[in-house]
Image (tube, rainbow, N blue to C red; front, side, top):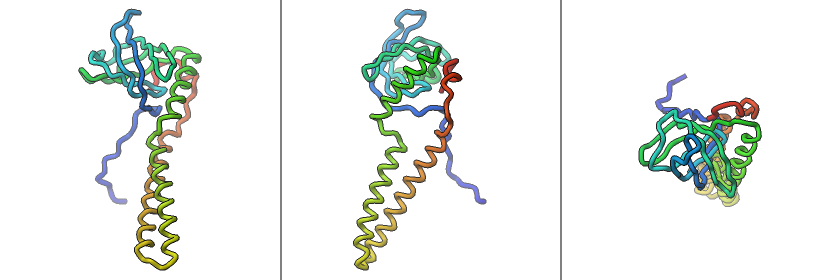
Length: 184
């Protein structure tokens, strides 16, 4: 087997994150430390745009307001970009909190297409175009056969990317284990 020169990116998160728009109040020692805007959220954490990100490994209480839902949750800073924002890993403290968080993320996921859904939409589009070209090719037009083959290849590539992404997300999560600490 030959070696590939491609670099393979490995996603370290256990949960997918979705684009969102929401307000975040950041508290430390039960006092308001600052405000930010939630831009990405998943069951493992969120990304907050703020000009004053906390240092890495700092814990804070977050009051999230996203999609008309409010959620108070502890989190730990796992990345920061000065004057831009910070990545937070949630610290889930109870099964009830886990349920509220997972329901919030599920609502956001329903309206936010993920990468797999976008690839699947592209694959369906390519297959529809290929079908049209094959119908034209029945009349023995070589250019339609070549186009149909190319579109079918594109659709196969899109479905393959969805399959690879799905394989990375096959890990099932036990809410009772996630309810006892930091999840990513």
